[in-house]
Amino acid sequence: MPMYEEIDTRSECGPRKYRDVSPSKAAQAELTWFFNEAESAMDDQSNFCARLAGCGVDTLEAVERRAEARHSAGKIYDRLKRVTSTDALLLSGLYIERYWSDEVEAALPGGIAGAAAVCARVRVEHLRALARAQTRAKDARAFVEEIVRKGRPELVAEWRAELELAPSIAVAAYERVRGNGPSVVPEEEGR
Image (cartoon, rainbow, N blue to C red):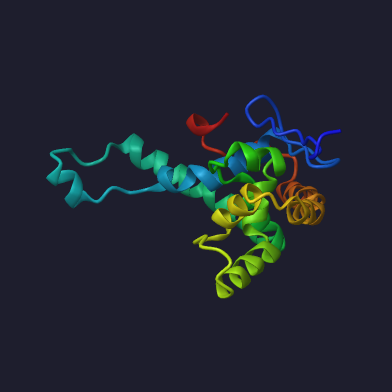
């Protein structure tokens, strides 16, 4: 019997599945884009830096792409404001693309590691461990890595039990507020 239950983590091939909830392709595209690419898609280059680099001022198409990205990001942000702050934070943990070691991916698969890194309980445990000089981890993400690598399966199992249902609730809440319309991710950014 495997130490950790498998969770479907297919993000490129199909939607993730958390318990009995799978995000729609549109929701998955929106959340992935918003938490990983939206900021750079909206970024205005300074005219001063462009001139120093010898580049011309932006084209009309570039300005329109950034405006469309700002509009799309604003829609997604408004939707995230309509879910609880806990659900919005959890969605950020689930969808921000981070590197995790193979050990962490095995112990906390399917975005659960990212959820753990933003979970209040894990963050408090990290601060307590820092205060007691029991860790040198600089943030909750590094703390999750440290706990898994130190071989503390009982603590990891507690985190999994706490976080097992939370992604389903957060994804379902986002799906409710977004409705069933098409994705708002800009065309060239869409998946």
